[in-house]
Each structure stands twice: as C-alpha cells, then as structure tokens.
Amino acid sequence: MGNISPIRKEEIETDQPVNIGDRAIDNVRYIREMMERSAHFTAVPGWGGMLMGATAIAAAFQANYYLPDRRTWLFVWLGEAVLACAIGMLTLWQKSKFEGQPLSSSVPGRKFLFSFAPPLVCGIAITLGLWRYEHYEVMAPVWMLCYGAAVVTGGAFSVKPVPVMGWLFIALGSAAFMLPASYADYLMGASFGVLHIIFGAIIARRYGG
Image (cartoon, rainbow, N blue to C red; front, side, top):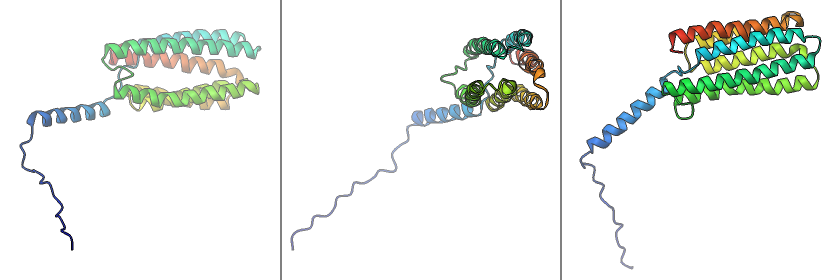
C-alpha cells in the first residue's frame, strides 16, 4: 500500500480577543436600522395639502360648469390632478429635506412612497379604460377610492391623521357610487378639497408645516 498522508486540519482559534470598536459599530448600525424601520414618515406636507385642497375646490366649480360636456369636464379634472401632483411632490420634497427624511434614502420615506404609488397607478389605468369606453359617470368614484386607498396604505407608515383621511376618501367614493352622477363634483370638492384643507391644517399644526 502507498503511503497515505493525513489530511491537514487547520486549527481554528476561538479565543482571539474581540475588537470592541468593531462590535460597538455593529451595535450602533443595528440600532439605527431598527429605529429607521420603526419610525414614521412625518414629512407629509400640511400646507401643501391645504393648497391642493384650495385648487381642488376651484376645479370642482369649474368642472361643474362644464358638466354637460364630459370631455371638457375630464380635462378640467386631469389638469387639476397634474397641478395637485406638482404641489404635493414639491412640498413633500421640501419638508422631507427640512426634517432630514429624504425620500430616496430614508427607510420610512421609501416605505411611504412604495405603498402610496400602486393604488394611484391602478387609478390611472382604470381611468384610461373608462375614457376609452366613455364611462365618465363613474370616474369620480374611482378617483376617490383609489386615492383613498393610496393614502391609507402610505399612511400606515406616516402620522395618524393621514390614514384617517384616506378612509374618509374611501367613504365618500363609496357614497358617490350610490348617488346620481350629477353629485360627482360636489363630492370631489368635499374630498379632494375640504378634506385636504382640514387634514392639511391638522398636520401643519401638529407636525410642523
């Protein structure tokens, strides 16, 4: 038989001293991650919400004037949606930067955006489908329900008034399905207008602007 050389086993040193500095850094990093995961996104703009509400009330009056012409009615609300989105994103970015909760790097900010976006995307897709088949009379309830769902899901990672406002949007959107289509602009003004102003004022007062 040939010589069989034994397999060399490297001894693992288990009693080496632990670097206290590295351990402290790991602990601090872990605590910071846990705090970020449990933190709420407080940079929801109160003043921006109030401004969005004011423009929505103006749009409700304008859209109701054009109610017989459904295409013009739709363009009025689409223009308001673009304006409100611009106001919301600008004021959201400003407040998040001021409070040190940047949307791109903070865990609460990313959770808020990623939860807020899907219902809005669904609302856009449904609106395009309703536009194609000219079912204008059900657009307003869909808008209120999808936006309410977005506010509720995003608000799960934000301050308490946010999801409460979302549920009120859902309630008004549900009521809009049971009322005549002629009430759409009144309910849109009450939801996108009045609710934004009321809860925007609450957020601005309690959570700094």
